[in-house]
Length: 306
Ligand SMILES: [Fe+2]
Image (cartoon, rainbow, N blue to C red; front, side):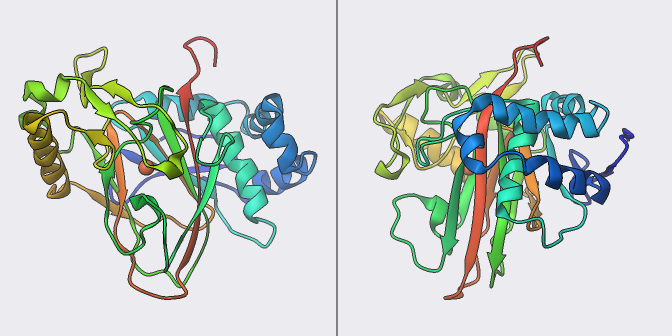
């Protein structure tokens, strides 16, 4: 395991493909001070300021963390880590966590504009009651395994999800599946329908007024399968495409290889968006249920430029 001063790195107990990265107090307390230089408006309005907070984090880890995070995300055998402060104190509030998430993502690449929020990140709630038009905020329904960015033009190489806060929560665990662990991958991948173009739209709340076309499966540079898929947004053109999607959905949801894990408040899960799928188990009903999440999606830096 890599050794970086001020960082504790261990294998996740549910999967050897996921690393747990804990930032020790000495780095967190320095970051708390350094981050005070910028308020959230500066972070949101000035892209270069986001890189400045990322540089603070990298400098405090002898400029080793950024490279290491990139290596993990691009490594097909891994591609995922959970990162956060080792100890949560009163000073670690939502504003600090937005800045920390900004720092982490800007060591990996450039974030995409999130149309739902109108900025480079989105904060959203999951509560007991919901009137929205997508599964994202439906607390009591399974959020099926999917990748992000299926309905936008921007390249979505990776995603970060940070748990900002939660109260009265039971259930709602994160569900993750790596394509190379998926027992049905070979069988579904060999169906040529998966490499046809599908049309992808999105509901109103996403604020994306166009549709895109792309296949569900495509190859990486080593000939390994990659996936861009979510159940709600492809618009099948015919029965063959619809049946392919139904088979794919069934084969994902029945997988015995899913990793079910609970993300702590203050922690972020970061994953390669082409060979990891993610979802969420339903919450146990509670009228005071409250969870707030932050998400950022983006693309890797161009090689040799990170
Ligand atoms: Fe997602």
